[in-house]
Length: 311
Image 1 (cartoon, rainbow, N blue to C red):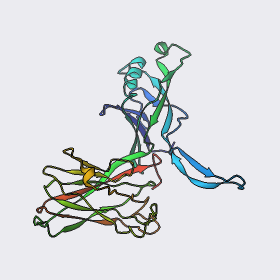
Image 2 (image 1 turned 90 degrees about the vertical axis):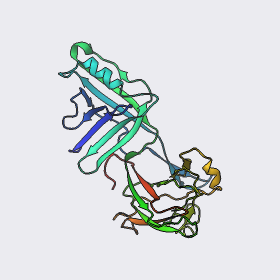
Image 3 (image 1 turned 120 degrees about the vertical axis):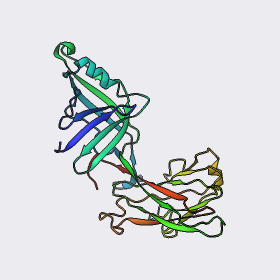
Image 4 (image 1 turned 120 degrees about the horizontal axis):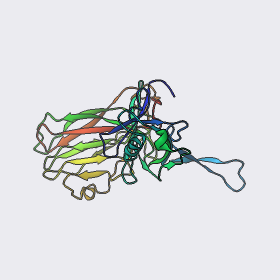
């Protein structure tokens, strides 16, 4: 493995860590063994279609599956604890019901993590007494339902400096976004509460023609429903999620009148790796029916198909 690589496991309850690979990582008696599987590229199945008499086949897309990992661990005693105590504590870091985190930290790419949980019992088949030898080889089978390595969200915000309480004029501004990852990025938005406030959010196609409207939706903007008193709106543009939620649990999806966000931010947009748009993009936002001081936050999730690289 490359120098400067460090893996650690975070307990499913959080705030408890086991370094498992890298300089000084085995101070709690747990070290990642040889030949782990499932750590690197996300699991992909390509689809091919063919007619009865076709020579060969035609590409039909691909599916991204859950990520299954087989991680062997070498567990030993330490000055502070016996083998059996270290083994027991490490086992408690994992659950069948809740996600633990597997962190990968590198000098060049910072930190990324996987959310994962046990998919079966750990395998332990010792050929010697582990209490006597103070050593055990334990194999953990784990699954990441979401198979991509995550980074912390990058955020930006815009705060209106104009009073539009009359509801007639719009206060307009921008937020800055880019996507340095190799995967599509679905933006998330937080709209600040003010009764009667109406926001506009961008849903640009960036040339994506998945609905055969890529050109028509080049500058698509969605006008959100007017807010109810005390209501913050949280928007997740991911096509597979409930896209709009109210902090006070109103049926805001009905007020959307069937309008949905359609487009993600393409891989590498706003970086030198994008074929056309090589600098961060200023996306327009607007509000009316609110005093100065209300605003919008955009959250940019960064998800990768590998634990390092691909930027």
